[in-house]
Image 1 (spheres, rainbow, N blue to C red):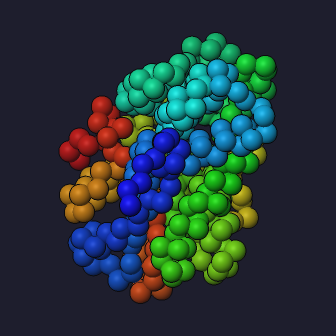
Image 2: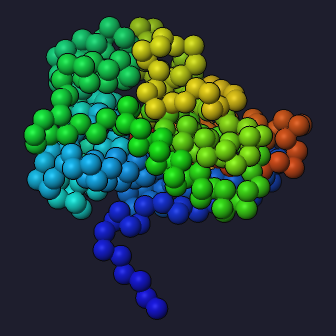
Length: 330
């Protein structure tokens, strides 16, 4: 019997797990390295999960109605996912987005009917960014407190503070990994942006087996803007620091009790992993996937992890980075 879907919301999730067999062989790994390929979502990123969850939760509560404008702050992929689902459901969409994200992100959101507003074009936000060396979380905090307010026709989805962010992964990503591995998973690794992916997935896996080792990946100092290095050669898009930073700069959806370890990765390391896995296994992914993969490589090399199964989440497709220097020879 055939099956015809009626909305892209029906296509979200159930992304495949793939063992990186050639990558394992090249590095002589004695642990299993399994990638969860989130670019199989309809809008090619893990953010489809939270976009659907946040919008449908607001609908269920009667907070939004077709014709309303949904508003968000993002470093890119959430904006694309929300713009697509907003279009499918009959909403308008407006997003405040980081200036330095790839051209593809702006183009895709606009193609889906969304309005993109660069953070630097809001004077007060630009001042915050200047004062904090481009801290996205600080800019989001300011926007939430002073600029973005839900009213009768505009609804702020607020991925950073919305409980449906982690909830979507607790309800979908975690169960999918558990089911597809038959519960045989030793380590889970994901880069941290807003914190929802690591938190929700980690909460589900820990509930099934408390011994599952949860690892969060953050960018190193060389990969974040600073007075000494205002324009890093390779930034790990959508990934933010969460270790040793001020409380008010912490990713809002991050459950700090769920992870067992933090690994810091630089942009050049992430880029090297991206280029390598493209050539070994035919997988084209972005910088946050590369950061998670490079971290997973280091973990897989540890003697104590021989024979263990490591699942690493790849958030998006490398097709969103073709206009950047990610794939330049290095």
